[in-house]
Image 1 (cartoon, rainbow, N blue to C red):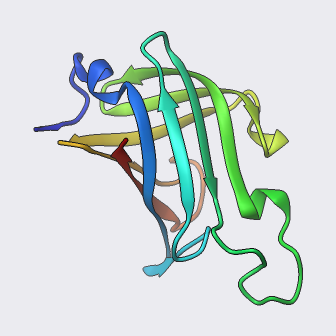
Image 2 (image 1 turned 90 degrees about the horizontal axis):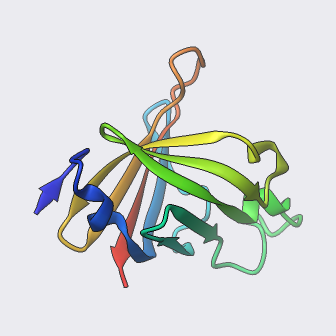
Length: 139
């Protein structure tokens, strides 16, 4: 089953998801912002609550020279979720990064069997070549 943006996708999104991969592309180059083997989970509830955490699976920074800031080691948001067409919208109520509180995170989503793929790119008014794909597996 492949679905994107269907009204009855709410049920397909509900559940506990384990992070499979997190990849970003900047100027056509693939980078792993949380390392090659990140860990994470996302809980999407039927009542509209969501909690998501993605973290490095390494004890130190990639260079080993200095400790990474918390937002470079851990992405964590919690709040309320809705669907708008092909977009999963997370209204962030709290986050490990205070700059995200109050922000609506928008991700294009695709559900394929037991996988959830969230994709994003900069807002139309943001000059950037960054895009990303985060893949989850149902637990």
